[in-house]
Image (cartoon, rainbow, N blue to C red; front, top):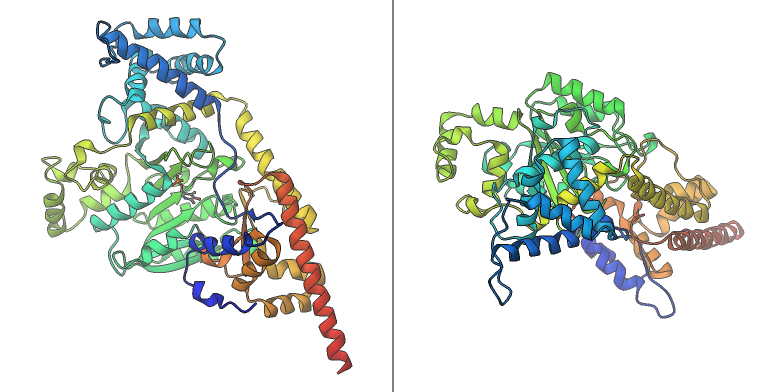
Length: 534
Ligand SMILES: *Cc1c(COP(=O)(O)O)cnc(C)c1O
């Protein structure tokens, strides 16, 4: 190939993808297969049905308030008698799946979680109508309690008391990250030149953001070992013992290797935190729901950990923009704020004095809320209330699914795709209890080695340096993979998302890569014969 691909070397894999797509889609009579997208092609329908049914009930409630008004004007919904009216609505619409789900959801909230049904209903009805500012801005009162149950079930394995956790409802994992980075910096909890440990390979913004000029953080890489199922070796985790490391950024289960951290690593981190109680940890657990028996670092170090969770992937809801930031009520960020020197506390008093008379009492999580709207607009902060309602319905859908049927179906779906890919490629699929398989990393050198030995692997690396290889694949096969290197892998690898295409397409990707490898092997052998004759 003649194009100079080095010009793309600095692009994030998510931007580079557009160049690969151009190349992959450029040929007639050939289908492009874009395996670069993390956006799932599945989605949860029942909680969405419930959302739309609830919307109709809520609208009728609004119209009841001002029933003499013509021209489509309603009033704020009233709480008096709401439960009775809701029961009648459910009875009248029993043939609708979404309505049956709503009726079950309200009884779950009342009987299992122990919340007052009328108040919850009123919050949901007002919320879905979007007729009030989100109050409290951090998260609606009952919505927080319900989503907390979900987070504790899915992220913590039920091992923490729900009341020990605070949530901030945000516009997806993306907003969560932006808010957390900003507030850590604005409050002097991380400062220019501080060391930040990053578990790699990782979702690229976790590498790119700390490098931005306004953060100016010094990165310490913790490299997962591809030959140990992408777990972090003890020696890598031990880098966290350095007291200069202020915070540890972690995606767990990882992206792109897509494995959850094993128990050995969790225990090692707990031991390090016992020695270093000041260490802050930011864990992005977006894929936790796809793992077997998932346990977040938040479960074992709740004081030290800021947990980011997004509803985007598991519920197929990237367009909804739904996520939460969770912190323990007792946490090291608040402890660090209290221990700051007087001058720094005075500075922060000036920053937040419009919100609360005693800024010392303003918790880290409430500073996140304030900072999300440049402090002064704190009173109109918060996630839109219809978004919070859909979030609550997603959470209840998972909580009420006692046999975890939805989870089992999704896991089966992505794992079948993975099998099809590796089968057609002619390789054994991984079998690792920590594997999540939302993505898979194809290590090109390793594949070449397994197919035809060491010498061929060296040849493959030589004919196409790793970055160029993905362009070659896009050009010759129409397949788009994202470069592992951009995510911080040390090996030449391509990320295949198993979430976005159908099974037969993964089989096709496997076959196309196999054909390409066979072609490369043929020219490798031809070259050898030629060399031998010369
Ligand atoms: C997809 C993804 C996100 C972004 O989630 P949104 O809720 O869609 O903004 C965050 N972190 C990781 C690791 C992801 O893979």
